[in-house]
Image (cartoon, rainbow, N blue to C red; front, side):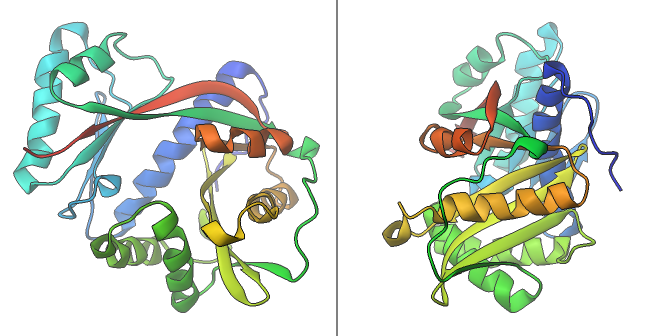
Length: 271
């Protein structure tokens, strides 16, 4: 059981925002299809799947004199499998010019995400949820398949990535005794939205918030985000965290989240 974070200082919140995201990806290593490597310099995950979400580099703490060699070595790992990868630069200390070196090696800046946190005792209610909206935690493989079918197209997953994404989360495990929990929202019985919560680094991390296009603008995304946060609060957690896209910052602000840091993603594709 993780020690619940009670420190609301800015450095503590920034550290928890980043560490929760990293720990959630490290949890994927329960699935036999993924490799996890971690040392003092960096963390990476690697698969045989040619979709970058499965292949990542995190928390690179490289010496100034060894940046280029470390990048070459990391890229070679993924080139060996002929798979693309994502290199995440978070707020933790690292080489100030790492982004410049990544771009020189051919990596392309994909997007910037905003690290946010909320005091769970001060969660806002948000707008009223639509009538006939029901939100449930995913407890079985069949429902996990439905969750995947709703989330994946919103995040532009290619068809070949759906089965491994499903298998990976099934291997991590379902249920209230697991740190990873998934939620699905149904409107009049139709699956329309998803969210996930990862309990790690002492906080509740929200991810995989997705609403099918034709059902947006009704407060569904707010409701499916709020449900796991309220559950975490009932279990004694004090802080909720996430990385938000530019389009979603407003939604999270209305729930009480505040911005604390930035994360940047660089993408590499095998030549």
